[in-house]
Length: 549
Image (tube, rainbow, N blue to C red):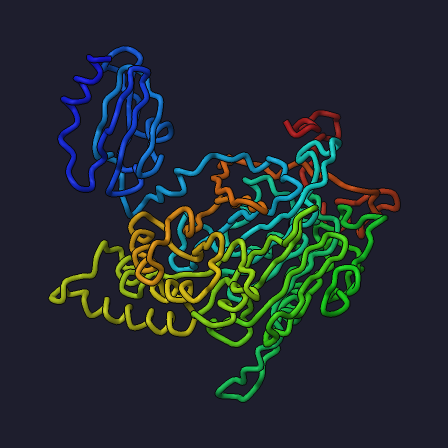
C-alpha cells in the first residue's frame, strides 16, 4: 500500500476550500474523504487492477464511487488515482443528489405498512425537457400478496395517480405500472401540463389491462365570468370529461373489437368509495365498461372536502383550494393508516399554487404534522428568463438582447405573481409550518445542481439548519419515496429506456366486444377491405407468413 499512497500524494494537490480531501486510507483499502464544497459528485475515484493503466471511464467511475455525499468511505482496490474535477461535469446539466440515491427496482413489492410515492413527472411546462416529464405522482399503499400474479406477485391495497402531464406515460411504462393500476386520476387543475397524458391513459388502457372505467377527480366550475361577453364557462372537470369523451370517440370505437368490460365488475358507489356524489359516466358508455369516463366533481371552494374515503382500503383523500392562475385549482391530502399503526401516514400534494395559507394549515394538520409535504416551486423570474433564452447568466446591460431579456423577466413576473411559489416564498411558507413535515419535497421545478443549490440557499435563509436530503429534497422523475411509520427511504428507480408495457393480467371473464361476429370480436367490422393486400394469393402462394414474418 505505500506505493499507492505515494501515487495519491503525487496526483492530488493540497486541498483548498471547496475541494475534496482524502482524510484516510487504511491498509485494508478503506478510503475516506471530505468534500466541504458540495455533494462529492464533482469528483470520481478511478482504479485499475493492473497498476496505473487501463483506467475506467469517468461514467463508470461515477456509477461506482461518486455521489456518496460530502463525507464518506468506500473500499477501493490497491491501485487508484483521484482526478479533480470531473471534466464531464456540468452544474447546469446534472442533478447529483438524485443520482446519489440508492438504486431501486420498481417491481419491489410494497411492505404492508408502506406508502410509496413515485414521481413520474416533476417539471414545469416551459421549458419542456427530456430529463423531466410534466407533473405526475403515483401513490400506492399497503400490499396484498398474490403468488399467482406473474408480474407483481401481488397488488397494492389502493393506488392513485395525481396529475398526468405530457411525457409521464413513458415513465409509468418504464416503472412497469400497468394500466389496471391507473384507474383513479386526481387532477389539480385543468392546465395541459397536468392532464395532457390523460389521453394516453384513457385511450390505451382498455386495449391493455384496465377493463374497468376511468375515474377522474377534479374541480367544479370556476365561476369566473368572461370580461368581454359576461359568459360564465362550464370549465369544470365534468364538462372537460364530456368534451374529451366526444373527442376520443373515433379512437374508442376503432378499438372496440377488443373486450373492454369484465363480466363480474362491481361498480363503485358513492357509499362504497366515499365519494361526494354517485359516479356517473359521461356519454353513453355502460357504467362497467373501460371506455366509461367518470368525472368526480369536487367543490374547489371547500377546505377539507372529501374526495375519496374508501372504507375497504382505509384511504381518505381530501381537497382544499389553492391559488393558481384562475379560480378552481385544488390541492390534495391523502391519509392511510397501516395495519397496527397508531397514526396515519399522510401526504400533501399542493401541485401548482402561489404561497397561501391553506397549504400551511393542511400541513400543520391540527398539530400532528404530515409525513410528506409536496409543494411546487419555481426559479426566480430572472433565472427563468436567461435560461429560456439559452444563457448561463443575465446579459450585460449594454448587450443588444438586454431589452428582450427585461421583457421576458417582466412577463415571467406576471406568471409568478398569478400562479407560482418562488424559492424564497417557499422557504417562508415552510417556516410557518410547525411541526415541520418529516420530508418536504419541492416539485414542478427545473432541477440541476445550480438551480437546486440556489433554491436551497433561499430556503435556508428562512429555515436555518434545514438539511438537504434529510429535511428537504427536490423531486426528479423516477424518484421513489418509501414512507413507513418510523422512517422515509429515498430511492432512485432503475428502469429501461426501451421498455414495453407489462403483460396484461385480467381478473375475470370478459364480455363480448361491441363489434363482434356473435362469438368473438370482429377486427374487420369497421374497415373497408376493397384495397387490402392479402397474405395469400388465389393460387395459394403466400405474400408473407401468417405469423407476421
